Amino acid sequence: MNRKIMKSLLIASILVGSTTFGLKACAQDMPYEPVFENVPITESITSAAKTEVSATKSVSSMTPVKHETVASATTTAPANTAATTPVETGNLQSALMQLDSAQIELRNQLIQYKSEYASIDNQYKAIGKERAAKAKLVKETEKKIKNLDSTKEKIRKNMD
Image 1 (cartoon, one colour):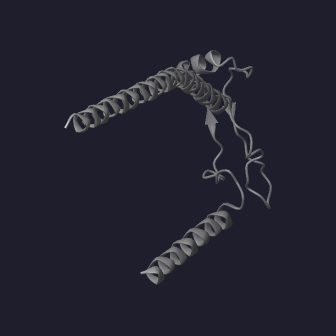
Image 2 (cartoon, rainbow, N blue to C red):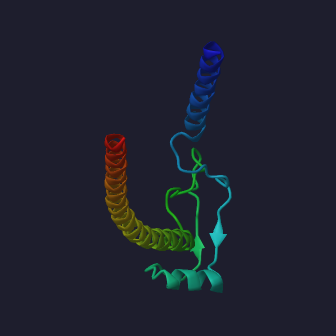
């Protein structure tokens, strides 16, 4: 049984390792692969994208963005492959703002849950102390009853 588990773990780790190595080798440590290397990309910002950019208070310009390739005999790569457009920047900033707001909401919820837990925990401790005190009283009362029963039995034996 252990051999089967060990073999399956070894195979899984080899698969994961080779997959990550293969992905790094293909991507050449680039965040993305430029698909349209030979074709210049021209994008214009639509009104919806303008509102997103203005909502995120981006300082970028609102003019159409054009990507031009460097025309030479040896290379056909875009001039700036790492640059992001204002629309992409706006989308990323809005995504970051959404993540921040979700994180703030979760932290507020955590604070609320912690306070509720502390309240319940204090009630539990108080009830535990009260329970222990009652258990002590019950034991003392039972002990007194046993003492009275034994005293009654002794008196009965002495009467005979």
